[in-house]
Image 1 (cartoon, rainbow, N blue to C red):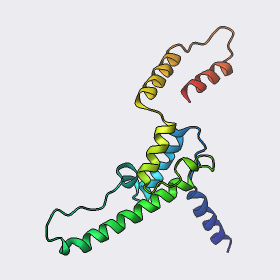
Image 2: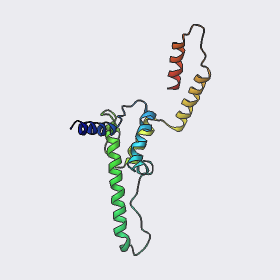
Image 3: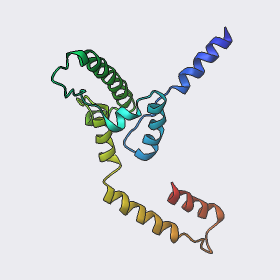
Image 4: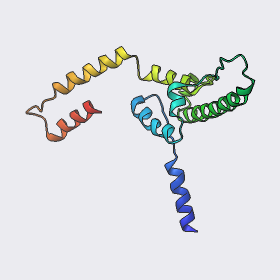
Length: 154
């Protein structure tokens, strides 16, 4: 009996989803990616989906296949969207409330918290400058210097 509860506890703890509270977006999104990949949902989050289009005039034969494909995509989208919704705090959730596609919700969060390509580039340049200027001063202890290095790196 103890083994069963131990296994159940392990399974529950390994399936926890990190909660995004508006800070450290890159860290959170890096943790979310393997969750989506492990459930075969990453393509839906990255690329989205559209209703399958049929270019033939006589599409009745393929209608069943398209409906099945659409239903599978819709199911994957709903699963991915549910994970995203569960992975944000109550203060962040209103930003994605009402969005029906996982890709759209993911993109909203990315744009609002990761920033544009220009702001990312500026931030990288600033970090490189800080890193290049890191030098241990005579009055610094190793602990102080280590703290400054860790702050810059993180």
